[in-house]
Length: 220
Image (cartoon, rainbow, N blue to C red; front, side, top):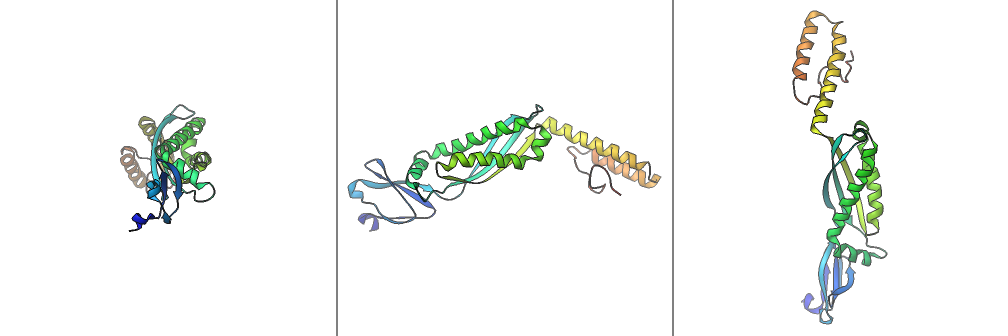
C-alpha cells in the first residue's frame, strides 16, 4: 500500500538513489520518504553504509633489489551523510565499481612509491609505518568521494628463495653463537645441546629455536 502511495522506507545501513525520468534526482537517508512514482520518480539502487573489505596483492622491489609480494587488506565504507552528501552519494552509486578500482590503484601506487625506498629488512620491520603512510594518502583521495577508510593492514613477504637464504643465515648465526658457549660446558650437556641444535637446524624454514635461549645469542 505504501508503494502505491509513493511511500518508501530506506533500511539501514543504506542510502537510496532516486531518479526522475532516468536522471539522478535525490539521495535518501535511512528512514521513510515520499517517492512520487506517478511523476516519473523511482528508486534505482542503494549505496551501502556498512564496512566493505578489499584485499589487494602486488609485487615490487626493495632498495636492495629484493623482489617482494605485498598483501594489503583495507576496510572502507561510504559515510558522507552531512553537507553535500547527495552529490557524493550520486558519485558513489554511479561509480561504485570505480571506487574499488580507485582504492586499489591508490594503494598499489603508494606501495610502489614507499617500499622501493627501503631495504628489505627495514621494510619488513617498519611495515606498520608503511601502512600508515599509504592509508594517510588513501584517506585524502577517497574523502572527496565520501568514502571513509577504516583500516589498512600491509604484510610484506620476500621472494621464497630470499626467505630461505635469510632462514639459513639466521640458523648459521645461532649455531655459531652456541658453539662458542659449548666450549664452556661439560661433555654431557655439550653433546646434548649439539644433538638438539642439529635436529632443529635440519628443519626447513626454522628461524626460532625454542628452549635454547631467547635470542640469537644464548643468555644464561
